[in-house]
Length: 371
Image 1 (cartoon, rainbow, N blue to C red):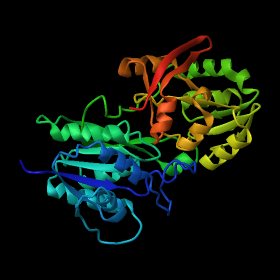
Image 2: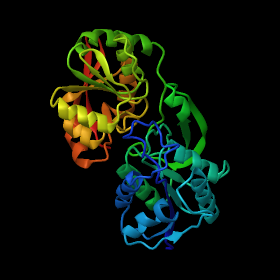
Image 3: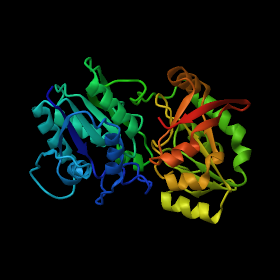
Image 4: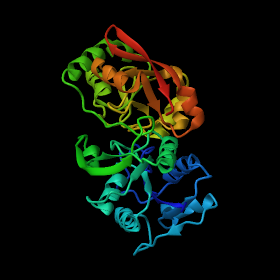
């Protein structure tokens, strides 16, 4: 049986802005090792016994990671050298489409998914799967974690049936995000391997009545924020908590409230670590889950790095959720929420039962899992 051919594109810019409290990586000039590390986790879950021929981008766009695993890939060339650009991802995806590969893996976020889509073209049927490595990942073509993406890729390549499904490629306007506006847009669809155990769900919008339910929950918690240190994450449910305290917080960022007053708006990883060092053991963490996906940690709140989470500890976490979202996530995932901190030790630390507040007198217990 001939070896299967798998493409790999890594966006070395992906995720670089996360710990800086940037809600994307557009405009950054400095790459990081984040996306390469995430790609290595995914590759580690592909069975070594599978005979695979790898095709990749040059240097940091795939070649370095594959060679570090002792592999000898076919390296595609780009017209220009220098820092990675969106056009480079598009060009590589276009070249891979012409090669007729069995699967294309790409490491990045929503912007990378957009570039892959643009490079493949609307008529392409090349199976494509995202390794989550961006700041924001609303698109439904990513694995729920890098390890899950690797397992899904391995399962797909080993299957005779090879089930595919058209999955949405979504992205937010990053300039609008920095101005406090959340403007999602559908850019098209990628044909992705599908398995509900490992493929990220479609992000859902808030349900009718969610705003009123979130406001009622927030009002019941107002007094709890009057004293102490509180880290409040992004999302419409946690936004209601900020509004209830009349705070000029961020809809899309992580804010710090100390004794009822806004202390830090859109805090970065460095600011959070400095705060937690100065006030050890005092902070509470308020987060919500992403509708349709169930992620509590690891999507949209990148300043909550493994180092920050380790300093906080799982006892600091309370999850806020409207009853409609609770019902939807329970129906989809059976009471499971997700943590993807990029650190197995921290994922294990936070895995387990977590308290979920859904109303002034209503609460539930769900489980945080790493995949």
